[in-house]
Image (tube, rainbow over all chains, first blue to last red; front, top):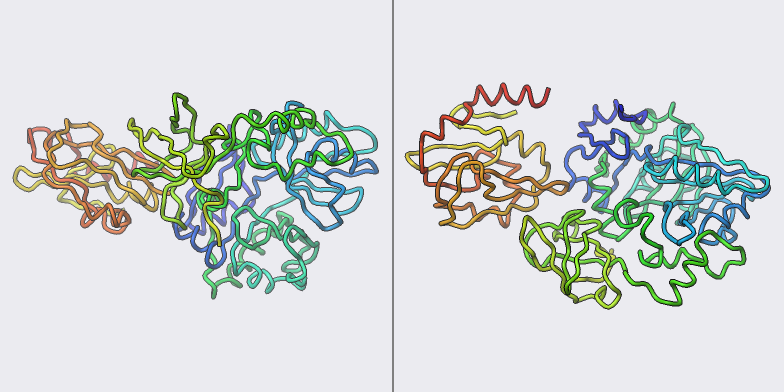
Length: 361
Length: 129
């Protein structure tokens, strides 16, 4: 099967990208180097093509009650031009996907979903659709660019008459960027200030080039999936398929804050999460850092007591210059200071549970 | 891609420089470029012995880990300790300061199994396509 390419594929080649197969897409994994790209986002600004992410639009009179039923956060708290991190859950309380919900109006929402889950999420939402609701996969209508870093606003402001200072965290606006109407959202997956831009594919090249022109002075950097992964891991944002999936619940993943058991409406997964909450979780996602030398990678075996599990995400942390990772442990072991062993190239090496996020500003 | 003429090469992208009965070993420019930013190098200790094609260590970039294989058999007589604190040297100077270990050659006939610079260039062409 041939890989899907984003409309910016040729531009990435021009920018010197190396590519990787990610969820069926040929995506830039790095340009000049993952370290440099990571640090550019922490110190200045980086631009990621994240067009592989899916967009699903929900419209209709019953859009709100429908989303209250299929997601675990409280959508009624969301005003127009606001975004909310949430999840689609199975009845057993585990993840179908983690998502971002944008509210345009009472009867119009856009859901940003993970690339690998796009079809699954769409089918799931169709299956649970009720009342006057339309669900449409509109992914192909958008190129998504993430402009992330402390200088992101300075750079993007040069391309738009929108007053970016008025778009607070987790809010968005619709307006012209390089004279093309875009969704400008103050969100991201890096732990830095920044924006996610949803734009028509026909304008992608123009906006990409304009961003790099505007950001030249502050050292704007094209950044790939390698940097995106280390940036999100340092601030402990979970990655679907690694840290969360159909076997884990938000409570286990440390995402209890997106589960609103207090909301009036019933939602899929609610019962399971209520009992999990009252009984207590059996495993908890914990951060660790290596004490011995070596880098713990995704899937490496982890040993504690007489039990065995695996690293869900593990990498070198460019900001901390240490090897860090995430692992599910029993609650009594998921405590800073606890020691575990990670098998690296056949040898058990010592690691220690630490506070997360690993990286704080 | 830099491929110095006076070295021997393996299909796993290690290089070997032979001086008398000592073989200095590192990874090639192509290998470091493919790996990306090297952040950790794990090497054996002086006195360890390896048979050709044994893994003697590993090199890790932000994104990936790669085993390093002994191109020839022998005992480790020197290790580039400076890579512990400055693993990026492997990217910056793969054929020079980025060398990894020196082996005392056990059987110089094994060198015949390695590629010349021209062979390796040809091999890269096929590898890269």
